[in-house]
Length: 311
View: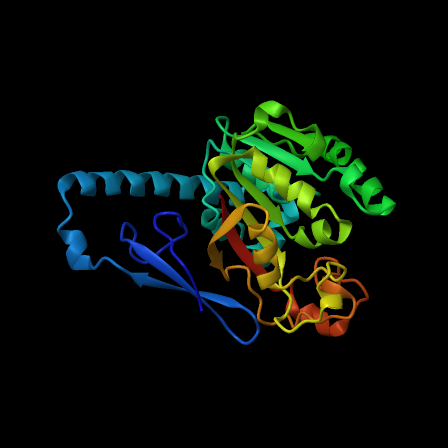
């Protein structure tokens, strides 16, 4: 069993806020990790807190409520259009709260694609924040088809984003090789949603994780949501070509690039997904590739949700 100490790092909803917590993780037979919370401070102990500590706790709680209200408003915004249909599978409120994303932060959204999270993050971060869409360096890809695809991403985002009519954080988009030097060490959070398989299979993983790390502040963190393979899935199924990766492999890869795992959650888990589709994750919604009847009731994929600190 792997133990991860979470001393004030985790801000997802917890049963006894303000207590010192230890998060313990255990892996079941499917390779899923379950987080258990051991309270190291009792209610009686908290009752003995000094007035100064109590006042500080009240301030933190008030700020947290403000952040939650702002995040709920962003998730409920009409600007999202049909995006909300996917919330039951993607849990944007819970996910961004788990990643400790707050208004006023500078946040990198890696490979934002059609802007599903953009339409939440920009209004939520607000005018004091900054939204940065980041795409892979085409020159780092090990195949021409990936390089060509990556090369077109910034332009597609710049063309589509004005039509979303978003207000809040200023937006910018860069291919990773074009990030201004002045951005080094300025980013609070970098988020990678369901793209780790593409980094792996295209050969850009080292380049992109290294550049993301250089953009983060010393206390910056990296949040990852990724389609989760079965623990015993063969290597040919978990090389990125099927969209699914083993959770232990993702953790090892990211930690090898200068990060430390500090939190994990099953908020995006889907036990109904057998994660063994012949056509890969694209068999499921929203792609529905192959029109496989058995896939329709499953919904979207089973996913890991991981939080890493820069080390």
